[in-house]
Length: 117
Length: 506
Ligand SMILES: Cc1cc2nc3c(=O)[nH]c(=O)nc-3n(C[C@H](O)[C@H](O)[C@H](O)COP(=O)(O)OP(=O)(O)OC[C@H]3O[C@@H](n4cnc5c(N)ncnc54)[C@H](O)[C@@H]3O)c2cc1C
Image 1 (cartoon, rainbow over the protein chains, first blue to last red):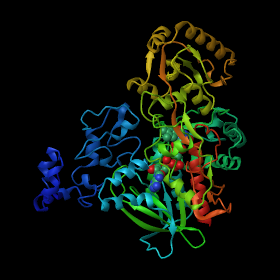
Image 2: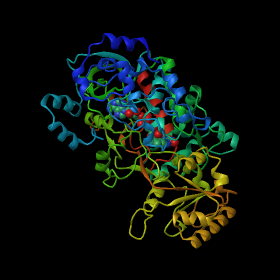
Image 3: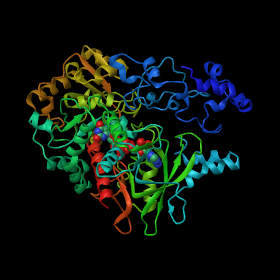
Image 4: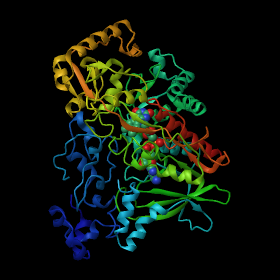
């Protein structure tokens, strides 16, 4: 699911090694993005990435398929859930440089084993 | 939550560099201003703030009444507010399903039930307006594709069964179709857009708003404030303030951070307070309702709430200290929440009471399976096992259940006067399902005063503030002391539709 745009960004992007030093980047992202903060921080380095930033490489339909649950629990799919469908911005549950609880845990005791809290 | 805790926030700002401090302090300082000479960044026709039932219904109705350029602004990253996590219970009188089920009901009966729960301070004109238009609102949801269980429910404080519930047992069964409908109709929806103040014309009329874009709730990021002109006016549909501990404690000091809350994180009330600054009349702010069907074993509304709302009519609620009933299981919310808070051990510590239901009856509700699966409810094959698990004295419990089953048979409850109609033939028998109960802050009856045109009234003139409309939980005084379950959806939707109609007529 790595698309061209991100790869180009890696190749031609301006490398902001200074600000990238302090922050953690997940290994699988490092491989694709390297140190080009702007690949994700499309609103400016000091701003959070836009809600579309992750979708440059990740496809929400694919993600929904990967995290699908059985018919009985089908609405617990974090990428296609009862309350917000496929519209929940990634940053609600995911953080690249930090850990985060999934939004569901506000009200439910569901388990998401692969989610990095 | 850092943005609600003003003291914490100030200290935080103090510790930061001056430049950052200015950016951070801006949201707290932003208030309504004269629009004279402001530079308009954008202009829209209908401007709606908040994306719950009230905002969505307003947007659809405005479009149907001819508006071409309707915009909904939502401060969170996701749409739907409390409405998207709501229980999906929708009360209306004289509905098609009541006709099929042979339930006799009327606008008058529904209003009378609500007035009784309101304990003399509810707004009869508004309740009547909502009851009269509730079926229209129900129809709007059906037209958009909402689906409902094929049965009616009789909720606490209602004299008849008049409550529909979405098949997903959640308000998302309404907000998702309404949001799709909005998009189909060409309504513009903006997330991460936080309303921060009104822009007011010469005559005190609302002509626009200050909107913070690229807003990240609960995070420190300044975003950018723009001025948006609203040609026809502004509809405030920003919901309640149950999540704002400072504000709710200002009204009721017992509602500390230790008391749980069923609301979505965005229910923080700044939209309502901004209307007060403009001159709106505050009504009934101290009447903040706790839900008596919530469980201490999960966060928010979770799964237990709807499970117990469905099961209360044919269940017994038991005080674990005595093994006996302690309330009418279908009394109104305040009566039950107060009774539950009285359930304490010998030292005075909270001892959450239990709700006992026959599995044969509870299993009809889709949540029963989930409640057991996610360990927030339990199934037992005998009274003995149940009593042992919750440390309830066995003999009085057995006696209480036997006694209650006589009431089921006689269709009369001399102990607490419960209406036994819905309990007919539903004896408390093994196997049982059991959940624990403890109230959570749930609904703010208080808010700004509106009239039956959804216009916001000015505290000095008593007249409508021109260009300003409000609908939904941000409004106050409609329900009085206690709101009956399932009466918010019709209110939010009818008043949202009403606001749109008034605006399009103005
Ligand atoms: C868990 C739960 C279950 C419930 N179950 C039922 C039920 O079954 N039946 C029933 O009748 N009632 C129920 N209620 C009550 C009912 O859901 C609410 O009263 C109703 O959803 C309120 O709708 P609303 O449109 O007024 O506000 P909301 O749906 O809360 O929407 C308000 C929106 O405005 C946004 N907002 C707030 N401030 C700003 C700002 N400054 N700028 C931009 N946006 C802002 C919020 O983020 C939110 O999205 C329930 C409530 C809860 C919490």
